[in-house]
Image (cartoon, rainbow, N blue to C red; front, side):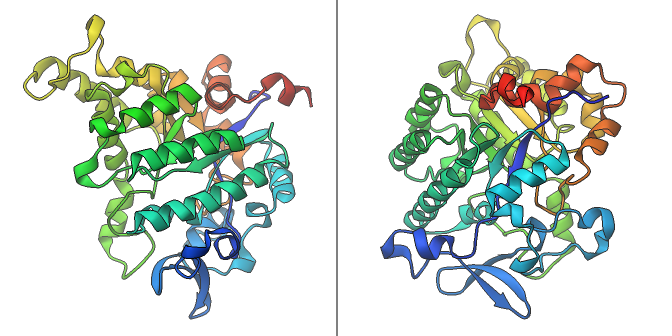
Length: 379
């Protein structure tokens, strides 16, 4: 039997089509995001004519159970789950799915990390963060919003991170993989890490947020799209290693990093490889930790992984660490477990001890994002 408290560490809102037209700073309004119907389907467009993506993959929860062959990038806004943009319907959908609280990420917003102009990207993020804070105000005990932050300009990113905290948002997402010459081992990020730790704002690397490269769901399809999806944990793994090997978590022990929607099973090999490299390749792992700590020690203290239904990863939980694992439904995206989350969880957690189940399905998420467990369970 599943634990009473189930929290989703990775759910989504779906931004209304007029969000940026009505909220973005006036100088960027003509260039800001908009939804445009092209050949019968709605596309996300930015700048004059840059098509970023269709909306099908980020809007059609439930299709995977009824007709998975219909899943594609093509969809229309009127087919989007209303709960994506209506907070009261969102809360109703949570009750239907048996989920007491959710950590909320953007849908369209994932693609805006590819916007070339940093000033435009920051303006997009500010408008979104304002709207998200209002969305979560419907029930802040159950809805925990994650701000979008651009760290191309670190000082600008710090300012928006501080503003997000004042808005009541529960954490912040940064690109899963920055521009190559500005990877997360660079000292310029030090004040950003320090600010996040001081504010108690967990940072997230969420799938589909690379700073550059092909945008998933756009352009001509090839077999390489499938290859990229099947190996998508490669980029956050690089960012994780850059942060650990450069000593970010040693210098900022209160910083928490969530790696979101990349599942679990990739982690044990990376942990083993990090420790081996640190132990055997001193000419490469040039930063040396104090107190004989290993890279995997910082992973277990500072990093959490959000997954949906990785049965293999569950079997590897002793290697990963039960305290480092958080379940998420991915509502309302095509990959979502909604509205069958409880059944799917019961299946993949069969045989897992109750105390470990409690951490995986809610306890760790409550700890990281400060859900009031007593309040949620009293309702």
